[in-house]
Length: 271
Image 1 (cartoon, one colour):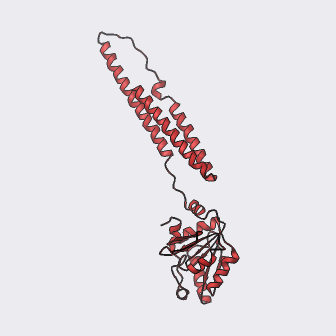
Image 2 (cartoon, one colour; image 1 turned 90 degrees about the vertical axis):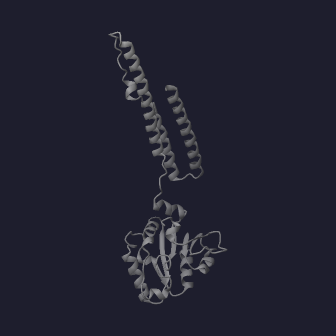
Image 3 (cartoon, helix red, strand yellow; image 1 turned 135 degrees about the vertical axis):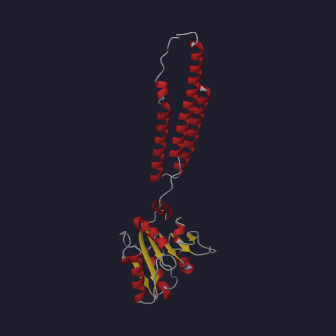
């Protein structure tokens, strides 16, 4: 049983060494602040596991006292006790091995990234973002609909709040009258978009033509622009580093720096 436990222990050490080598290799390919934290976590896990395996169990520290045989039947009794001790030792070693394996497996469970981490990764650390309202932030898809009502997509609010934590966000749209502007601002305020402090009403821009919206984007010079109009996306491809085109179907012949997705939430993995 001792040989079996020793062999299992050696196999565990080999598995740890292989896992640590692979993880370290992958981390050093894309080294950033998160990778440094992950390396520190791996080092902690190795030290923790080594100390856990190195510490003797309670049964090993407390050696049972030997008693002198008192009767003729003591020989068979001692033999039974020895058998029981060997069996108990095997069970203890197996239990300790299982506990150690469980600790290792639990420590190396993949940690699901937060929405904030996904936003930063997807935006490639971009610091300024411009985004159209219709069809992306708002349920409505035309300026004519805004004359009747403005409705914020509830599923996009959390994404907007996370973007404003890391980026300078500007929202813009073409409207037909001043009443439409008021409806949009009230809808955004009621949805809680302005509560985080990152987005203010002054960063919600309105114009009367699509050319005006294109001019807004070029003047702001964002790292990312989000739009639904393929013509504007094409016009801005030469001037904007990255663009996200929101479209129900994947358009053909887009530039290399243009990403496409069905919704802003889907791009960040929220749905």
